[in-house]
Length: 594
Image (tube, rainbow, N blue to C red; front, side, top):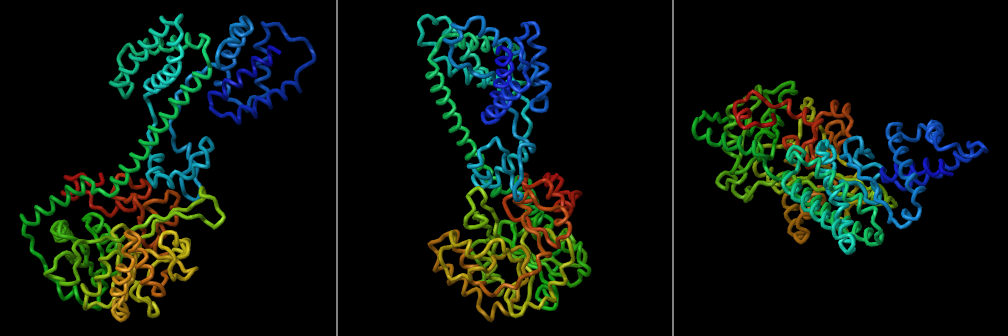
């Protein structure tokens, strides 16, 4: 039976270190059955042959455990088993031994599985927690994708030792006979705490740190040999664990908040570019070519972009022009705000886009547009919605979508472009990969706007966000990004007036009012464009098919991870970056997307 004890104990040590109780029970029971089934009916071999018998046994079960790992554990099991046999009474008085400390490896892409294109931690995480992006948004997925391998193993080891020492110390200090040990405990804990307060990496640690670690390890080993109340140790460990878990939760939520802040804040490089262009506009006095006859010619192809981002709007225009068969008839209207107006003007005056012309308009200028002016520019609004795939699906199977819709500024189009009858509206987070001229010959059958419908998000699935309204139950929602708008039909149906009336009625909904008002306003007025026109999700979905991306006419980076941000999904950024002129002086000086 000593053989069973040695080998079984080695299994227990291994799986205890792996922190997997279910696998421990399974393999331990499997081991016992295998052992009994193959053990010859003879007396146990002498102690000198015990190790060879165990090695033979391990070879039978070789595929179950890594050989290099098992070797150390078998020897460790022999030592512990030998001590048990030597002093059974002393061992019985011991508390439950704490398993050896293991430096946990950081999560990498190997630890992440994907279901429906979403990152999910593997079986070592409780599935009841659900997908990480449901709890912390797309920050969680981005964090796992960009997590760096941890190299500071000594710092981690010291933290683990400190964790265990703090658990044993309260019980040791209560024993009068162990006053010397408690003093050493206190001194070692204080030394390690001081070192960790001054060092965050292995490079910062003092030269004598190995000695301090060994002293701490020796003190912990002595504490384990003292007769203690295991309940006290258990309670202290649980207390420390709960406090650590609360602290980790706090930092996770704080990180998610800072991630959202980074998403909504203009990067320093783009702010630098905007300021430089604004200053140069007033310094250079470039000749502003007024091509008013083209700006208002209804026979030309007019594209409208709402943006406060110089680089983003430039990429949209450049990608459209590069893939256009004929650019002579192309007119781009960039609608921006006071803050970015002069930067936009200077950028598009000093850059040419083949034969296309670009007009920059300040939508906040009341002298130019009168009542067709808002106090501030509003960009397409994105709503993050999560809902189950079907009514009976558990919360863990919830799907997340980013639905982008028209903003308040879009409803000024008929007033700003009074002479135009048709326009194509492009969001500033799209990249064009094919010629769009076919959009101008579309017969929309009297519909106001052509858009990509999202039939994976039905109107009745949005009731939890919008309340109970008279939506057609099985009608699909739709997206901004690429929209063909019949301005003549818009004016006939007075779409803008309908929208403003609905916004006033739903003012109590705050953020949801724009979504509800837009969906109600355009109900039955959407012409469904073929899905090959637009592929969306490049700003949040890691699981898109690369071949599908290459074939799409327009790529829509809807979601938080915009391509001009450091948070953008790296494998999708290349489709956006290739339309930047990296040799431009201002881009180089402001370090834009280097």
